[in-house]
Amino acid sequence: MRLRAMAVRVCALALAAAAVAWAAPRFGATYVSGGSMEPHLVPGDLVVFRRVAQGVREGDIVLVARPGWPSGVLHRVIGVGLDGSLELRGDANPVADRDPAPMSCVRGVAVLVVPMGRAIAAVQRLARGWYNRPS
Image 1 (cartoon, rainbow, N blue to C red):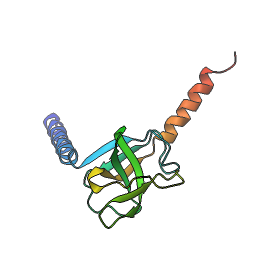
Image 2 (cartoon, rainbow, N blue to C red; image 1 turned 90 degrees about the vertical axis):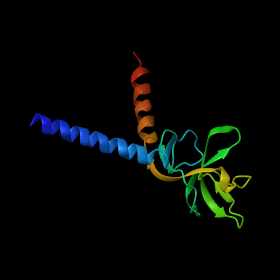
Image 3 (tube, one colour; image 1 turned 60 degrees about the vertical axis):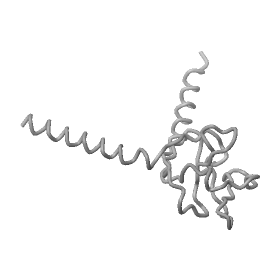
Image 4 (cartoon, one colour; image 1 turned 90 degrees about the horizontal axis):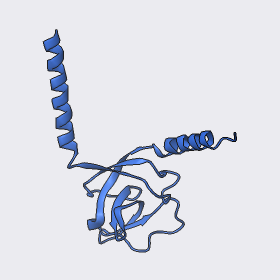
């Protein structure tokens, strides 16, 4: 029985390692640090993105390399030019980004959002209230 449990664990570990090896070059993740995509994305949310930029269309959220932003910018595609360039805008921004983004600057397309930002903010509010209680 003990040998069987060990074999199951080894198989599970091998499958997990294979899944990570398959996903690592295809997917990436980044944390939201600004408020330009509120209310859809809030600071602290984790965004998983597909590294391939093919098939980007209007409405997608993309991670784009921008000068001065080492980890990139997450914005929504509001238009695709004839040359393939993308017109982007943060959901909370009243106007589109000044410069269109060439497809070569796209690091990935969002496929999953883990909404951790609101939970982190709630814990921070609780902690501040607890630590700052009048004595």
